Image: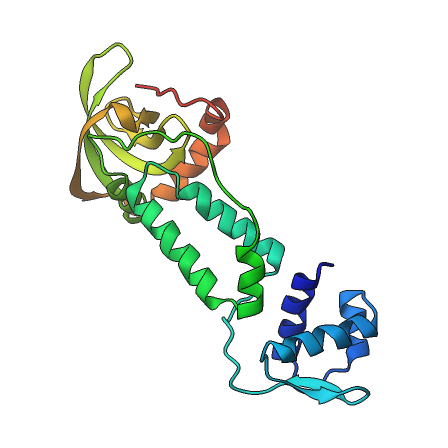
Amino acid sequence: MRKASRLFEIIQILRLARRPVTAQTIAEKLEVTARSVYRDIAALQTMRVPIEGERGVGYILRPGFSLPPLMFSIEETEAIVLALAMVGRSSDTELRQAAKKASDKIAASLPEPLSKTLSANALHAWGSIAPAPVGIDLATVRRAVRDEERLEIRYRDESGAQTERRIRPIAVIYYSETVNIVGWCELRQAIRNFRSDRVLTCESTGSFFKLEGEKLRQLWMSGWQSNQPGNPSSQP
């Protein structure tokens, strides 16, 4: 286990303990030597983490030390930060902004020595991203999925033909080329995938399909989704 990960785990162990914890007990949980734990605790104390105690007696974390209610290991934090970086390259403007805020919150919540370790890592998301669709606000779609609200869209298919559709949106799929909206099309009476870059207009209707969303997603997952992975094409 890397040192940064051990520091995370030691703080977690002491934070959750109701009585002093010996270095040997910590060492057994982390599968390292007690000597390594002594060095790590000394390092944390040097970094002003309020750990009190001594060898043979045990260690405690002094009350008042502020930590987030949920702490992740270095590897878990790296995974979250990288995933947020990927979202930050999405064509969904609102999600990009949310990803940046979430990254800032994570960085601010970490104890200083651990945040420095994280910031030193070269984790980047790269590659081209699809331009934001012009005729539809993806934030509106995501809210409609959550609220189970029907949407009215004007859609242009691959051949250029335009149709008016009322859909019950149930999922949003983010591809590198485009974003697909999955929904029950009331015109076709079937689940369809709509490329967001072919949506000309989109309006909320104020008409809801409460308690139907999960059933439609199960229907989609049971058969329709098998035709979609890696394929951004739509089904008009």
